[in-house]
Amino acid sequence: ATPMSIMTATGRGAQAGVLIKNAEALERFEKIDTLIVDKTGTLTEGKPRLVAVLPEDGHDEADVLRLAASLERGSEHPLAEAIVSGADERGIELSKAEDFDAITGKGVKGIVDGREVALGNARLMADMGLESQCLADTANARRDDGETVMFVVVDGLIAGLVSVADPIKESTPAALEALHALGFRIIMATGDNERTAKSIGARLGIDEIRADVLPADKAEIIRDLQAKGHKVAMAGDGVNDAPALAQADVGIAMGTGADVAIESAGITLVRGNLDGIVRARRLARATMGNIR
Ligand code: ADP
Ligand code: MG
Image 1 (cartoon, rainbow, N blue to C red):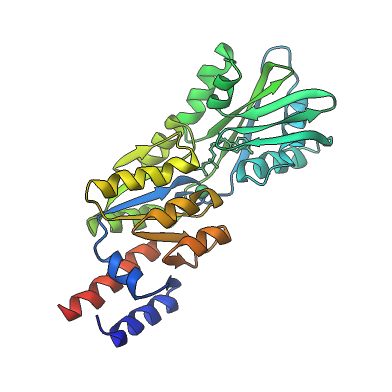
Image 2 (image 1 turned 180 degrees about the horizontal axis):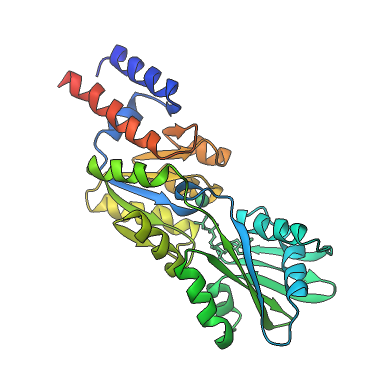
């Protein structure tokens, strides 16, 4: 492509809120066959809301939420914000947490009111050697509805679960349909649970789902695909996604996401909607196609 045609393409992209870092990103994008998308904040709005607090027998709902939210005040994860806001809305007063510890891809731990509290996913429960027979069916039913379930542990026993819902962005279904029509294979990679991921994936016609993925594994998934000869783009918004965005042939960051994600990406979607990728592909094809 000529410098002039690339300038025209990047200029048009910018007007539409698609920031293309350089000529290389545009050239590489034309050859992409596989698109990996993060779930939370990329396919979904990334603003989860607390939708249920279910105590285990013998535990109090407000108490479970208070302990969970007190702990989550120390975390910047979107799930943590949902739990803290949920407690606020219910007028629950929070306590100060001590010895706060975040466990990447799993949850959080700390001391609240002298009690040992932990909050996180099934993997965290497995690490702690805990299992809840009673809540397992409820948890699965909620995951099948696309919710993310977290268990609350108090003094070594599961005291209940909290569940949050993160709606799919309005623009996502049409964007994915257009991307499929352009010939991309679309893979979702998420740290979330498999049932939750499958529920969201099925609604969107995603080709393949990789769930329970730890942040470092996202880059590994891309490396494997590249080793098989695929040209891979990755769309994500989180701090967690930065290594994968850097590993991809083209990283695509949501402009609404973390700064490190944007720095690692070749393309930034200012509005944070995936339809920007459709536009980027058309610009790439038009620009590169012109020359050959
Ligand atoms: P993603 O952004 O792809 O959903 P993360 O690695 O950020 O992935 O999170 C993966 C999972 O780890 C979450 O779905 C949740 O179950 C658990 N988790 C992470 N952080 C927290 C937290 N602060 N509180 C509760 N659970 C958490
Ligand atoms: Mg995310």
